[in-house]
Every structure is written in C-alpha cells, then in structure tokens.
Picture 1: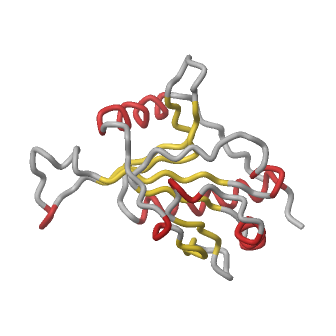
Picture 2: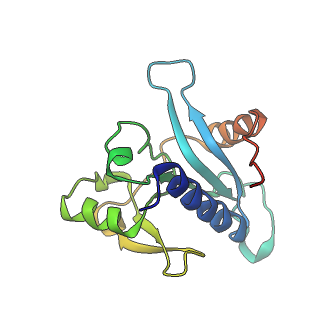
Amino acid sequence: MIDRAKATDKLSKLVEKRLTSQQMYWSAEVDFDKNTDDNRRIDYVGFKAYTPDYVTTPVSVEKGTFVCYEVKSCWNDFKSGHGLSFYGDENYLVCPKELAEEIIAKQAVDRRNLNGILVPNKSGTALYQKYELQNTHLTARTRNASEMLWAIVQAHQRPRRVEEDK
C-alpha cells in the first residue's frame, strides 16, 4: 500500500494537472479567515472568469467560477478534522477510489456543499468523478469574488516546497 505522504502528493499533482488543463488561475493551500478562530485552509482553489464567446466583460470576475478541492489520502486523513472546507461554486473531495467507496458506504460525508468525489483513473493520469453529489443540494458560494481572489493571491506569496530530485 502506498504511504500517506506519497498518496497525497500523487493526488495533489492530479488536481494541479486538472486545474491547469481547465485554464484556471489557482493556488494551493489557500487560507480564509486568517488570524481568527475560524481560520480554514483549502487544499486548492481555482478560478475561471466568465467569458462568454471568449470576451471579457466588466462582470467577468463576479460571474466567474471558483472551484475548491480537498485532498484526502486515507481514512485517518479524512477523519483528522483538518480540511473539508468548501467555499466555492463547485466543491470536490479528491481521494483514492477505495476511500471514496468507504466514505459513501459509511455515509461519512456532509453532502450539503459538496458536488462530487474525484478519484484517479485506472492509469493514474487524471481524475474522474466517481460520485456526483450535487443533486442532493446545490452549492452556493457565500464569499464574494474579491475575497476569494485575494486569498488565492496571498497563497501565491507563501514559499513553496521544493521537490527533491531522487
């Protein structure tokens, strides 16, 4: 079995690939309500401006879409009490297929603000939606676009971990 750190790294790279391929402006480890008791960190937040017919308009930012991803590598990670903060227009849990099946079987996820659970495909090269949950409740972003974008910008200013060559 793959260890927790390696599983998290693999899932994170797939989220980054997905965000990049969808041409989103995004950042990892995005904080909200920083320096308060309600501080929450979302693993990934992506933004895509609303541009009908590929034309930018004055409302492109306000009508844009924010997508949040929380990465969980195992049951202990899922139940750790960290994460599972969903503030976007679309919100996804990203985890191994086995964990997704366990979460659904145990009805362990709060479906109110979650659109679906994404898992790696068989070749491990992309994510696909294993469970669609949006029909149970339509998510609605409660934070304005400027707050969401500012949080993404601030996350870009933090030093990033450097991958070691092995």
